[in-house]
Length: 214
Image 1 (cartoon, rainbow, N blue to C red):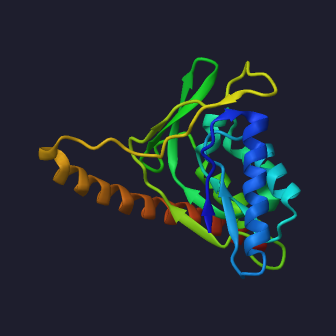
Image 2 (cartoon, rainbow, N blue to C red):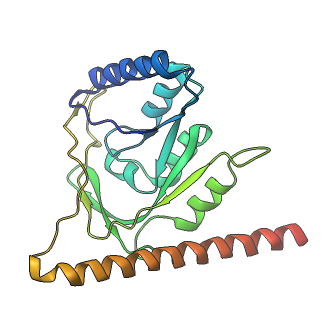
């Protein structure tokens, strides 16, 4: 079951509300056989999400790592991945351009391979998670070209910053007479992403084989 947080308020209050939600889920569904994952959805930092999972003592709760969403929390992809790594079971793959805003960072999703996300390094780290079997059980391809998300966390914030309400993600649609062209472009972008991810995985495989054979 996928979950994301969209609460507004000071950070400590938001974290407390989320912790209460998790406690309810644990008490209600701990014997259901369901598993739950929380996405880092642009407003909470990696260590805050890890703390929520640890403090829940809920074995069926994990984290979903999105390639770009940490940017808006003023973090960078590899650092966020290292922090979240022990708890990641799901992944959203996409590329994005990092946009500097006053005191923070936004991201503009773009065609995979044309952004600032360290695609190869992220995939390599994620593939290697787990000891006897893969830790990540699902990878979702999200090609969200032109989607923009503003900064939510800032360099000069205090230890209990205000977290604004997080609107649902959406990409603006063009005028009606341009919709057909947009739909064709979205299909092309999706196919491009599949090919890009395949190419990066092939590079990783070749490098792994080289290391194993030399």
